[in-house]
Image 1 (spheres, rainbow, N blue to C red):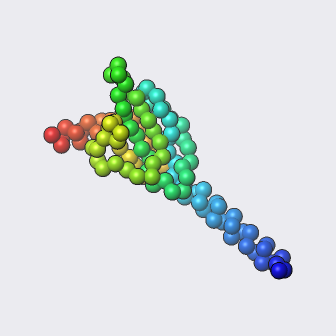
Image 2: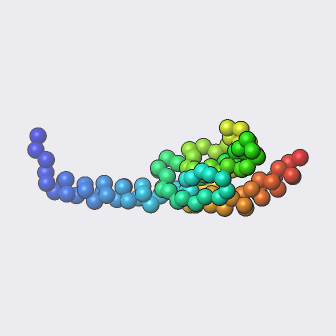
Image 3: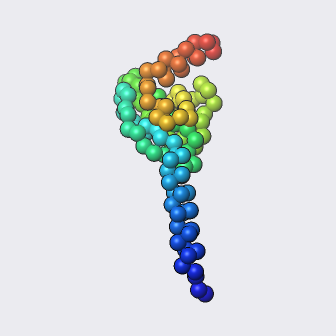
Length: 112
């Protein structure tokens, strides 16, 4: 089999275009864990649809924060692995711990 050099050259920009578009369209989320708030921006893979915040509690009652990219989102007010969780769909939207917790507390109060 022989390949035509022009065909190979003309296809290269197309491959580069798809790689660049994939990187540009990838969601960016903070991915970290610890006590208190943490901010570590990461580019998620192109299958990720959500940024997730979880707030599991430690045995001594402190709030542990886990921020990550997520493929799925738990329903509103549902616990995610025995921890309150919230998700969002825009770049770095899981940055603010306090506003997310306040929103969760407000919704919880209205729910009851």
